[in-house]
Image (tube, one colour):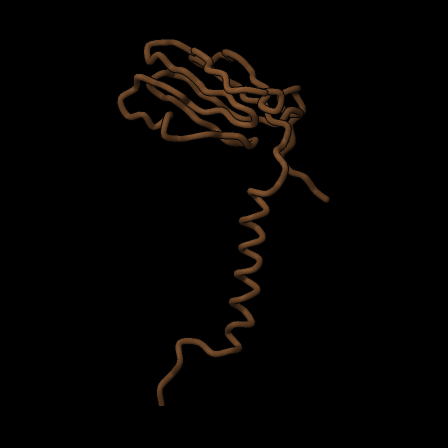
Length: 130
């Protein structure tokens, strides 16, 4: 007797798991943007802060340094626009927009991290409970 790969009862487990996974995946991308601030650090010290929700147009920020780093701030996101570093990992990282995301150019000693507007004012939270 030949054994089937799966039976109808297996669908009772597979379908709910797929639905939950799809909801979690889409929920992460469909949620409204949070109030985020980009903190740019150069050589370990704060270079500037950019409120990404108040950003109305695309702005190129010249950070400079030995790698001639430029950032691209746009409404809701920021990214490395240009760097003379050899591997270009920072430029290929793409846009970051959510609190907790970070982009770094190690050769240029420049980092960009996103924090919530509350955290940028000194209020930090490790977890939320409901």
